Every structure is written in C-alpha cells, then in structure tokens.
Image (cartoon, rainbow, N blue to C red; front, side, top):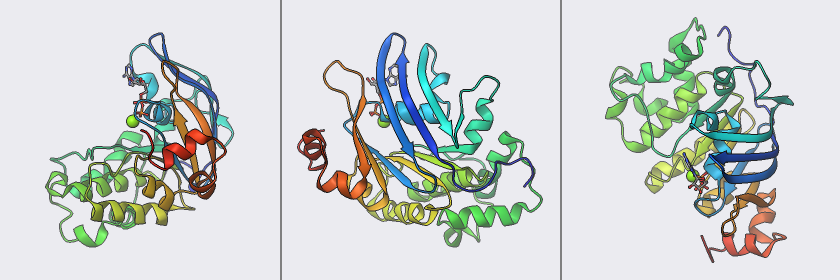
Length: 263
Ligand SMILES: Nc1ncnc2c1ncn2[C@@H]1O[C@H](COP(=O)(O)OP(=O)(O)O)[C@@H](O)[C@H]1O
Ligand SMILES: [Mg+2]
C-alpha cells in the first residue's frame, strides 16, 4: 500500500474532553488513555455520552451542525484537532464500526472491502491479497471466499457487520472504534465478533461501547464507566483494569451499574 497510515496500534488519549450540542454540554472533563494494542470498553447507561465521546475520537462529532468541543484528543501524542490536520486523514487512521451494519448493499463483497481505499486515496498493488487479508482478520474469509462477487447486502446481519470490520481494517487503521457493534446481532454472531476483537488485540487499538457487561468483561483490558447524573453532563466516574472495575471498583455507583442495579 502507498499513502496509508504507519501500521500497528497507536495510543489514543483524551485530555479534559468536553462536547456540546448547541449550548447543551453533554460530556465534561473526560481524561482517558486508551493504550496501544489494548481493548478499552466504554460502559454506562444510555444518554451518558458514550457515542458522543467515540465520535470525538475520530472527528465525527464536528459533522453535527451546532456541535462544539474542548480539550485534546492525542493520537500517539499528536492532537487530532491540530490546525491544518485533515479530518479525512484522522478518520482513516481511526476507523469506526456502527451499531447497525452499514455495508454498501449493492456493491459486491470485494468492492465493499476495497471501498475505503478509494475514499482515502490509498494505492494498493495487490487488491486480491488485501481483500483476503482483511476478510481473514475480520473472521469472514472462509464463509465468503467463493462468492466475493455477490452483493454485500445478501449477507446475514452478523456477516454484514464482519464485512464492515473488514472494510475498516483494509485501510490499516491504528485504532478501531466500535459503537455497540453486536447489539443488533444474535449470540453466535456476537461471539464471532468477540473472537475477532480478541485476535485484533495487539494489532489495533480497540475502543468498544457495549451495554453487555459480560461482553465488556470478556473482551476488554481496560474499562471506563460513564454516567450522567440528573441534568448533568456525562463524565467518567471511574476507569481501570477491567477485572478490577467488575469486581472491586472504588465508586459504589460503578458496582451498582456493573451488577445491573440500574441503567
Ligand atoms: N445529534 C445530536 N443533537 C443533539 N443532542 C444529541 C445528539 N446526539 C446525542 N445528543 C444528546 O447527547 C447526550 C449523549 O448522547 P449519546 O452520546 O448518544 O449517549 P450514549 O451513547 O451514552 O447513549 C444525550 O443527552 C443525547 O440526547
Ligand atoms: Mg450510544
């Protein structure tokens, strides 16, 4: 590949990150280090700003008219909002997978995987190899290798989500953001995606929002608990190694949440 990002996982760090929609402050003072090659889970009740935080991390928040932000987001120490830095370049290095699988339905499976390259203007001399490698990493290769010319929309929901992961991986991002990637999927498909996340560990930094506590426990190294108290902006109440957050957190609200007492 020519013109792609430097390969391998990168560290992401939020420093005092805040976000507004209009004059509504929805996220305040988030400090969080997402270590290179680790999986960081973001948990917390609906509406506490997890998706907004994720969108701050790859410059999608600014696409909402009237939105604003403050603080810094550092990718391997460099502010992604530095003057002159292009959002397109940032989004190529920091990919995103959404709750609802969104492949291009009429494009073939192969074209879907390669579609990010065109947008990012990356040249690739061996497209067949890249298609195989990306689908392999997303855990989909064996199921689709004989029908790469079929439309992406013909796959099952779980396969479509893995196709979206393959499309994101094809540009060799340093970070992959996932916003409730399994919430529309059945348990078997969910398990496949969790296996994929486990295999990506060390190769890509993963940040995943999930409402499934078992999933957060299974897939992540580090967990951050977000909460918005009544009429207050969302904040990170507590963060730490996943094992600790789920067994002996410092804040009683964290324990109540991970034990399912609210949210
Ligand atoms: N596009 C938007 N315009 C205005 N308010 C929004 C928008 N998206 C989210 N919000 C508000 O921001 C807050 C955080 O939402 P969100 O980040 O989606 O939370 P979560 O992902 O934790 O459920 C909520 O109060 C929500 O209503
Ligand atoms: Mg959300």
